[in-house]
Amino acid sequence: MSQFNIHEAKTHLSKLIEKVKNGEEVIIAKDNKPVAKLILFDDEKLERKLGSAKGLIKISDDFDAPLPEFEEYSN
Image (cartoon, rainbow, N blue to C red):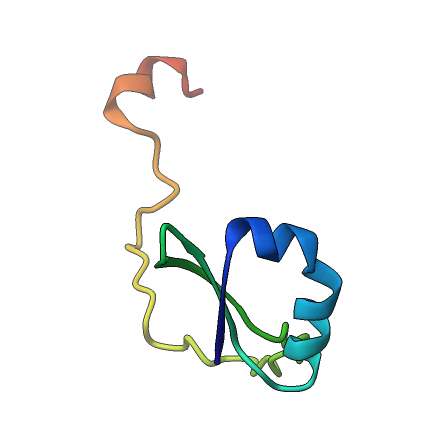
């Protein structure tokens, strides 16, 4: 893991990105205090599973009933 101040990071951004692409984590610091970390972006998509929330959501039987405030507008 390497640490660079903001000025160095702006000046050598392409080199820092190459370090990250090679598996290294890069810390960007301001006044020698870490404020950000550059890491490799993982574009791997998560696989969706149908029905994974089954049983977690409860809907009442009258969920589509008119609200009392709007009863005068219903037919």
